Image 1: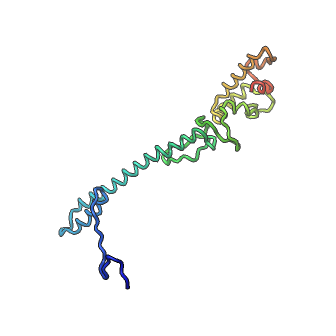
Image 2: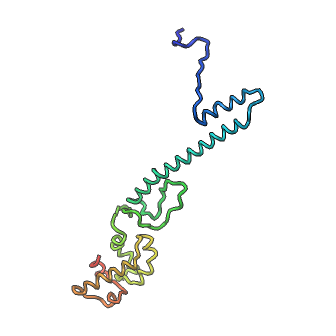
Image 3: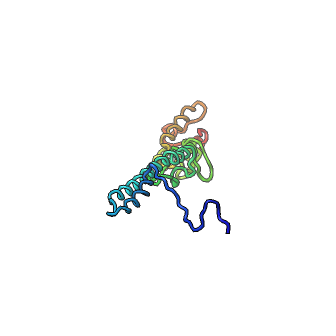
Length: 202
């Protein structure tokens, strides 16, 4: 029967294990060396070796978490600042397990969002101008200040914009066009905007 060169039949090969300058090497050598002593060795040395290994493992875990939080989670935060597929209202993809619960309202932090299957990068105020049905609550073709005040919190959460300010901007814009359009008394009073006025201003 052929044998590999350098291997003596019936002889168990031995491996020379050199000690290294780390806590794991200390743990590997310290425990058996203490066990070989006649008096059973020092339990303090064995305990020290174990504590050093545990402490080293914990510190490495802390460093890895810090790197993860800086690189991976930071990259996720950057990507969400450009595009949040869930519209930022219900963010369920936070990769940091220790992060606080996400807000349920649109923070306005993302440049683009996805809503109803469509991506949009328009400013929140522009998005709001394309949703007349959400502004005209009773569907009578007139957007009143009372309706804006009633929907203020809901629309603020949805679009991250103050709907009262949007209402006032529309009124001011239309009043400045008095030279080319007829101004309804309710519009002049800043209390209502009819749909044709809204379409003109938008």
